[in-house]
Amino acid sequence: MAAYNNKSMEAEDLPKKRKHESSHWWEDDLEDKSTIKWNSLEHHGVMFPPLYQPHGMPILYNGEHVSLTPEQEEVATMWASVVGTEWETKEIFRKNFEKNWLRVLGENHTIKSLDGCDFKGIQAHIEAQRELRKARPTEEKKAEREIKQKIDEEMGYAIVDNVREKISNIIVEPPGLFRGRGQHPKAGYLKARLSPEDITINVGKGNKVPICPLPGHAWKNVTHNSTVTWLAFYKDPELTFSNVKYVYLSASSKFKGLNDKLKYEKARRLKEYIEGIRENYHGKIRSENALDRQLGSALYLIDKLALRVGNEKSEDEADTVGCCSLRVEHIKLEEDYHITLDFLGKDSMRYFNTVQIIPEVYENLKGFISGKDKENELFDLITTTSLNEYLKSFMEGLSAKVFRTYNASICLQQQLAKFNELDQTVEEKVKFYTDANREVAILCNHQKSTPKNFDAQMEKLQDKLKEKLDIIVMLEDHIKFLKNGKNPVKTDKKLPTNEESARKALARAKTTVKNMEIRLKMKDDNKTVALGTSKINYMDPRITVAWCKKEEVPIERIFPKTLRAKFIWAMYAEPSWQF
DNA sequence: TGATCTACTTAGCATAAGGTCC
DNA sequence: GGACCTTATGCTAAGTAGATCA
Image (cartoon, rainbow, N blue to C red):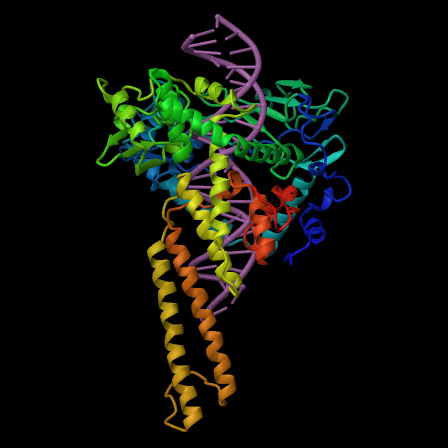
């Protein structure tokens, strides 16, 4: 029945070095809620990107050569690398960069504005370097890869309670330009070069403190905090608005895997409460109390449309919203109890959806809008905290984001349950899964920009398909000839000389065409939908594993290597497993 | 009670790696 | 073995949510 067995999956997926060391943590009791995350923690700290190597290429200002100090040149090179991209013409990015650039140049510098600067010399240098890199001999590439692997082998692992675990990011972020998304007010600011003095290291009390890799420097701080899972953290000393950056173990580690499993278990627990919760918030929707009506209506939208909760944001961030921070300008009441939501959500991705809602919520929304200006909050009486508090009254640990996990997983399971046709090829089954995955991605509004050359690629595939279809017609004619001794098909292609091989060739061609058509359709359907996000974060992997076992689809067709490692705990799900 | 801090998850894009075709 | 295309991975920004502070 199962397309693969648990034993072989395990051997294949466990990172080599963990084979003897890792415990099957997922078989243990997960309900250990102790705040102590580990007893011993040892690692090699973080690495720093290589120092800047000056290239000496000058820039022009109003047509005149200007030589730069290495520090100035480094910043100029950062800008040269965005010339020609969308960043170059983005107003905020340009303005902020100019401010930072003039600061680096210092007072009384010849250069007074970004507009007069010509970076073509540096651009040409970058391009030449790129070409040179591309043209490296195979040997050199191989040697480089081996060095990288060796460093990774030495530095890229931590020992947590005697288990060797992969670290996700051991090199701290290099200096560069802050690429804030959407209309981020600080996009274009200079990210500083970090030094050990910016880094706080977390290791076990009795464990070795990592050696600082830069001579003459020292870590900012060394702590022994076993209530957290981070190995190090830092904050850009220049970018006051930037977040703290943490160094964590990789997705395949126990820390991450355990949390992931608990997340899905929590979402499964919601199943038992969902009916009561829905009943309750429908009651609130009809309440006399305005605050209750807002609470009920907001939760209705979160549940129905899988919206994010929408925390407050600071002035220093892009103006994006979620459910609780929706403003009057983001919603339009349409005919027949339809509403149109149009707003920028996380990552400034547009949420644009017209949907029919229940009359009670429609009337409520009408009431919330009435008398307000367009920039006023739609749900002005509630906060994300009060909404989450309301949710906690039903179930311990319940918060708004659990609804997204729950609804995504339920959606996948329901879609996959529709699979009932026999004798489908693996290709068709994969397409079926992808279609189910797409339903979830659309629900969660996971988008991606259309890949470059998309149209050209589609055209190419269509040409290939047409070519194959022509071959099918030709083979069919050829088979008739072989059968009846009529005129042979005129072609420069080699055709089989007997009927049996011709029939086989025809069958092969038909399969190829079928697969090509499937791939073409999938490519087009998924043009602007990001399928990965829901696969990685929202859909309980056990639903996928169970379905793959049941329908005999190799798991590698759905989960690539890294996902199989991340979801190792889910690989044991039986074909009959239900979310 | 609201603001801020902390720790973690979720997100899309760029690019490296890998595969395919000629 | 190189060009081209696809897929996987790395990078880092941007969320959520609980804790702590003023």
